[in-house]
Length: 255
Image (cartoon, rainbow, N blue to C red; front, side, top):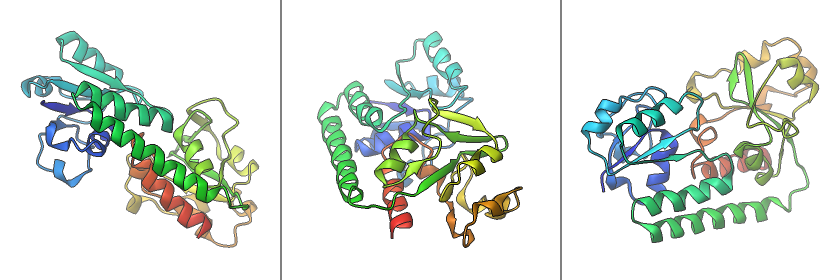
């Protein structure tokens, strides 16, 4: 099989299936696992060069709708008759299902069953540990600073928060992604602020961006340690790596 991945989360799903050796091309933003370093790059995930995809003569393309604007990639694949599937998980259960779906179309069904079982088991083990924790802090997740975007109820980060023994302060909003403002965030009085800006490396995010916002002092934090700068690649991508992020979050907020 010759396989192409058009976004980082799909590339990571392929790795969790143990099938990275099948990849012949990936999008520009795929950065894990290290083994993909030498593969042809096909452009940013919102603007894939379909000519290059076609030249690779893939047996299967893993496309995505995880970011608004990716529709044009799918339309181009359809127009040219390039074999593909579309993955668009919004929940941990759907990520588990995508492991099965991707493995099935790649002719590796048993790999999918094995990977899905491992994913489910690891998640349940973490949940069992955090069930015993009484202190359940509230979390404000920031995906983008201007305008402010944060995950709502229909999003894996609400599940990640709960599995970590915490609560997403915007879990009452029936959306996957919520555009809001800083005043609304302050009014909900989160115990922690989790900064994971989509596409922005952790090293480029500064706590001062938050501490300088009007009304920050009203949150009453004893120090800026309540502002957590997190790796966006462990929290913003719908892939099994979310469990790495979950384990890290548990260790930060519960010790």
